[in-house]
Length: 618
Image (cartoon, rainbow, N blue to C red; front, top):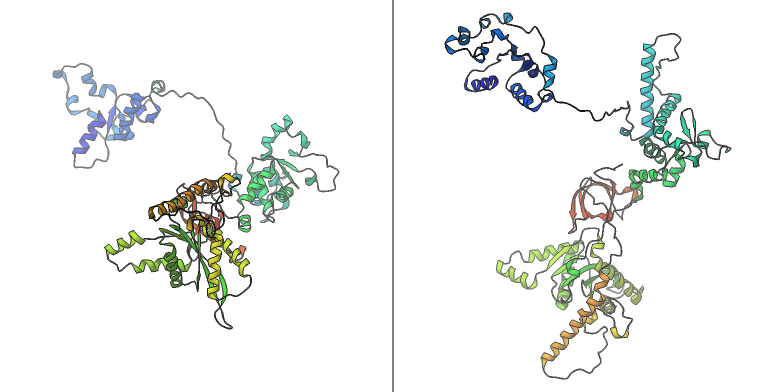
């Protein structure tokens, strides 16, 4: 109540109070106030805590009971018998503070302890801290040298403290570490690592190695004691797999050449016999940045699901299209003059039909001419996939610029009737446009067999490409039937021509002037194509032939190398991942990498992770 009254008065006053004086005649209460509140039971702890919050424990003083005016009320004295002490306070308040009553006795410890919490000890843990933590070191020789310096420091202190002339401890003033000091430091860590092996040694767990103890170190006996080699190689030191110095030792031998797992393990066993050294060597090699840099093992990820445009039956041919350039091919444009021409391929993502044309060069305007010829024959596609070639990027920009000046109504009409969505795959990721890349290979092989090393004229090349396109469209695109009841195989020409080949189909046909019957006949051909597509082609799209194992997702901050087929492997560019692009299944397959000079967007199959951002977990 005293502290609450003090707090209320202090809030109402405009003056600032530096201190206050609280008095009590209870020595036990003074003992509580001058102790930690949380040491007592909840009832006392809550009140002592409030007192210590509202006041300073040093402000509290002891007043004897006979001089405490508060006792007058508690003793049942009538109001008319209250003395002047009740109205004006005790007399010593008019004296100097040095003459006030002082504490001459200590509170009864037994009474104070009655309200303390009872602590029950259930366990006692003894923690022994090593002066040197080997887990803070990443190199074996550095750990040994630091230990040697610490041992020298301790030895010099002992030599200075023990000044007896007959002592064996002599201080060392040399700045260089001697071989004997390094050997003593190495022996110290070997003995510490073998502490956990002594119980296993007594149980006979290593009886196949015939171990023995010499000078406090467990060594491997074996049966090659007569071999003419060094003693350490005949009887290597036995070390456990779990201790950190085992990893440091394997790392030390691995860094002397960065050889493979077997070579590293063989080098280690020339001096140390580490239990499970092969596993440690694999881990060390996996984490070694130098080995990762030299091996150039690019990342991979679980293959993504097919896009919806690849699984859209009952759509017109070339409704979803992918395109690419291939070549160049030398063509004759004069008597003694040749030029380079390029082949352009368009393929339907569902029927897998192809359309081939010739481009004079790789410019944007030339590709637009080819594209105009394509849409004049096959119609406007809804979506076009392509790589990031300059001609494709330029064509997409040109198509945008053509409609920039149109009115909103004309633009809507164009998008509704002829709108084309152009999608670019990630740079340096041809597998993301694999539909057209696989058919480029087929077209190249057919064209090479057709023309060989001949130099054609431009229209001869165009004729050859057109015939090659027809041959490729005659290939089977699904399961080849082996049952006579299944009919013939399914090919893109079944959709384009209504038959697998260009030969004239044989009758009989239903002769009728009614056009409706002809439309129904064509519609039955289309329906039979998609029915066979669902039976023969769709099951082949289900399995994942490669990239069927989930891998770690690369993260922002990973240190990587950019794979570049045009540069030497040892000169690949170092970079850092600054952005990732997860797919619909939250798997990272495309990233943005920042290098010294620029930022690049690449697939994970074109990067080598040197050091992950989270580090390596032990």
